[in-house]
Image (cartoon, rainbow, N blue to C red; front, side, top):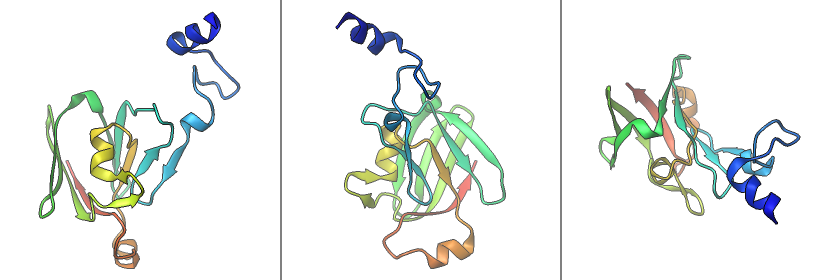
Length: 136
């Protein structure tokens, strides 16, 4: 029992090289335009923003001062260096039971978001969450 308690707080390297995590806890579901941490207690340290042109920026969650969602404006993240705006469709719609992009951001469950190319945006299902543009 003491070993389990110690492992809980300190972590122990296991077969996958990660301290204190099992393979299932580290899995990320790919939901098309964003990833979702599957482990019930997992939280991302940063969110990686991937533009369709290949540019990527990572923002640490602790640096996000405000999360805002307005259906007409999209999602706006206020960070110390300015603002990040995500525009698209169904940005707060339920993708799967209890999985929504905006809510996932506020709970630090989203490790990455990607801007989809125009062709993919046009062919996406009407109820799918689609990020058409990421501006920083």
